[in-house]
Amino acid sequence: MNLTDLLMQVKLVKSKTEAKQIISNGGIYINNKRINDIFYNVTMNDVIDNKFIVLRKGKKDFMLLKIINHIRRPQRKKRNRTR
Image 1 (cartoon, rainbow, N blue to C red):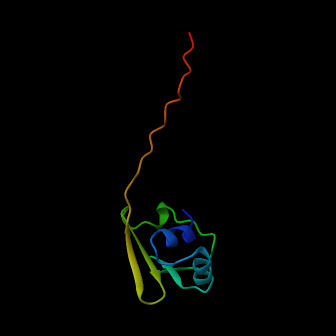
Image 2: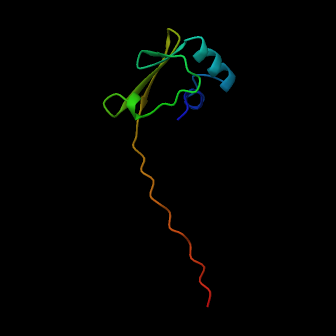
Image 3: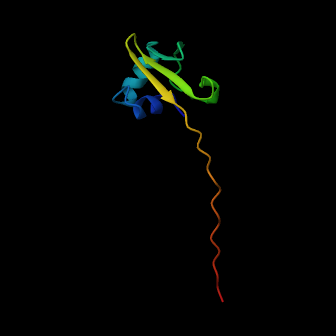
């Protein structure tokens, strides 16, 4: 998932523009690692113990995200039954 979208979804920022500005200025951390790339994608490599991600905005705004594995089942194709 794109970091700017994630920041908006968890309500650490109010807009994508704000997210991009904060990221560009070095104000976003994932697991205490500064992220400067506005195109950064959060992956399972960022997850701690396959369960958590710590997001930080600035010095005081922290958020602990709990990861829930979601497995999508393939959808069946509908057949047109003509007789």
